[in-house]
Image (cartoon, rainbow, N blue to C red; front, side, top):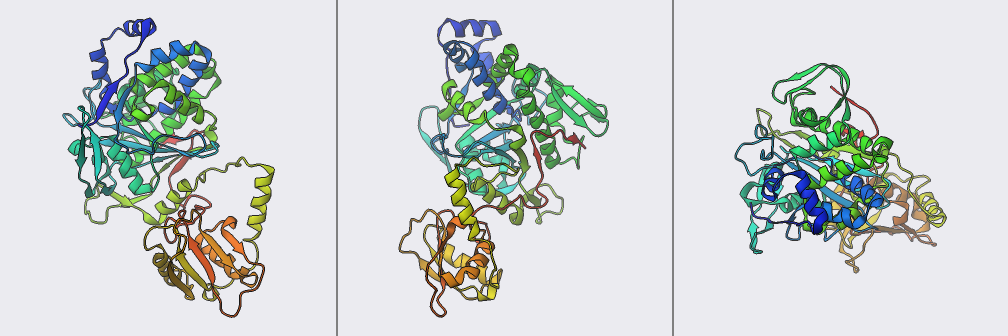
Length: 516
């Protein structure tokens, strides 16, 4: 598979001693780490590293762990790097490639690996909350054209594919994780800052490093395919048993990949709770083992391919409370083109509002936002504009301009207003004189406030978008709606949905859920 990989060599005697202590050659270590799978504990591992670095000599820690990390240059697929004052989007990937010590019997023999397990981890701008969105491997989607870096530094352009499984966005036809990142952006509208992959061994080693992960099963389980055998009730699992738990497809639910996603989310939620528990945080030896296992398992893009960068990322994530980390699954439907159901398609009606929530940094859990007294007063004033009587849709008069939305946004909005909302007195005025407006705005006269509130409710406009005039509009004058860069599509709330659409599978990371 094309993709410029590098391995950072450890420097100095500290690294040499650590390598000797692990008792394996550099070549063997590379072979063991080439099999990336659904070991998605990178979050806790990065946090563990931060805590270890804070409690020991930072230089020694950096040198020791820096040599553990594999990197891939994703040819500009990311954002250029996460920023402290912006939301963060990390794509966590697990493949079904079966290489790696002790993993010969797992996965897809002889394959370069697919994007088998995928979680888009979105952290809010104010770091109060995070959403972990699982994307099913069998989703039928379009994979865009992408570029990959070769070992000699040259670039290969790989043509996109229409209407194919999401999982072939990695490994197949020479695609690297950058192609998967681009595919996620096509689906969700969210630019992925970085990717991380981890192997089978991360599940085994990290679950062991923390002293086991608590799980709950609602029935006796004996799955000969994954080798998972548990009695009904709570268990603390680690090692091979933990790997069997996240791999099983036949023990829970309807035995589909969607049921397995739920099981993995429950395991990861419990892992995060264990990572943040006092028994882990107060144990230097546990923290060291977790950070060791995590960095040994990680393959990341070159933008975060050093311990310094991972440490910066870990510090950004450290303040997120587990109760405000929500695992959700991309809303999908059975593929209507298939008689025997094997793949799924996007459930547009539920997925678009969910994407809007993430794009607009709205949590799936109730989170009190950090804001100053000045911000709170301004927000209260803006919200007051939305309160009061609303005009009937048939009485709403509005001229629609495109001032920064996608091409054709004004006409798309006009069609939606007239055909779906009954606002027949709306007009497409084409492009705005200012084509680079960052935010959508609605200007109206003092006597049009009821119309403005009605339109704001239809479109999900925030109070900050409303620009009331001090004088009455004359006669049959229309309001002026200018679509800005925050416009994501007709029917998609500008502010994001107030809450997740009904039926979206989700679980908070602080909740213990029994697998059924």
